[in-house]
Image 1 (cartoon, helix red, strand yellow):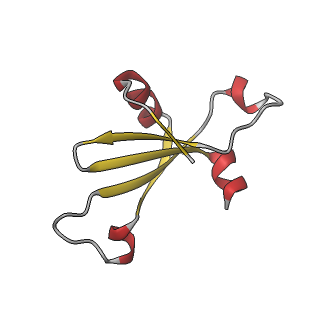
Image 2 (cartoon, one colour):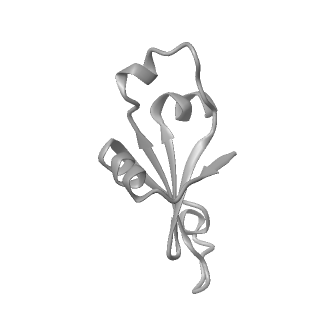
Length: 82
């Protein structure tokens, strides 16, 4: 499940903490056409305080910008979900 957000500062912060960005969706499978959006799975490193918390999350954060969707997943959640 994705949690949608529109905060530009949060988007910028997540981008600065990112360690990988993978094009997914129709572009990854070569099924895209002129109407297709572009989907990126972006993996970021959580702040240390979040990594050592006993609480964990399985959701991704999603930010939409024009015809591009950015799905942000922290490294631990990415590994856990795979």
